[in-house]
Length: 235
Image (cartoon, rainbow, N blue to C red; front, side, top):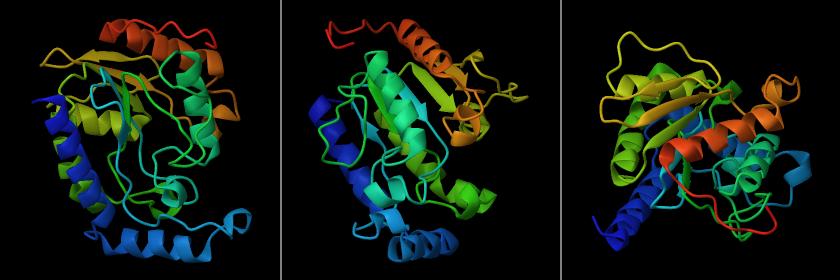
C-alpha cells in the first residue's frame, strides 16, 4: 500500500472511531465527563468521543496502552495527551528520539512522532478505567484494522498487562506469555511483542516505573526495530 493510501485509510478509520457508539455504557460515561468536566478544565471543550490512534503512519514501533483517560485523551482527543501518564510517556519518547518535543498538551501543540504510532485497544474512557470484556471485544476490529494498516511496524510495545494480553491473543499465542517489564516475545510473523509497565501514576509515583527504565525500554525497541536515532542536538 502506498503511503498516501495508508494515510487515507488511517484517516477514515479515525473518523469511524470518533463517531462510534457501539457501547452504551462507555458512550454515556465519556459524554457525561465531557459535560461535568474537572474544575481545572471547566473552560475547555472536551472531545467526548472515541479516540483514534496517532503518530507516524510509517512507524516501525507501535505503542499500545489500555484506554483514554477521562480527563486526558477524552478531553483532548489525542492518546495520552493532557494527563500525567502522557507527560511521563512523551518526555521519554522525546529523550529517546521519537518525539519532536517533551510535552503533549493538545492536538494542535505541534508535537510530531517519528517511527512511533500510539494507540489503545479500547477507544472510549471507561468508568474506573475498567472496560468490560464485551466492550473490549467491540473495539477489537478497530485495533485489527489499524495494525494491518501499520504494515511497517515490527515492534509492539504493550503498556501494561491489558494491552499485552490483547496483542498476545491476537497473535494466537497459547498459553499466553507472562507479562513483565522488558519481556520480549517473538510472534509467528517475526514481529516482537515487548512488555512495559504502564505509565500510570500508580506506577510512576511509586517508582515501579522510573524514567531510566522507560528510556531503556524505548531504546531497546529502537534496536529491535532497526531504527536509527535522528541527529537532534536538543536530545
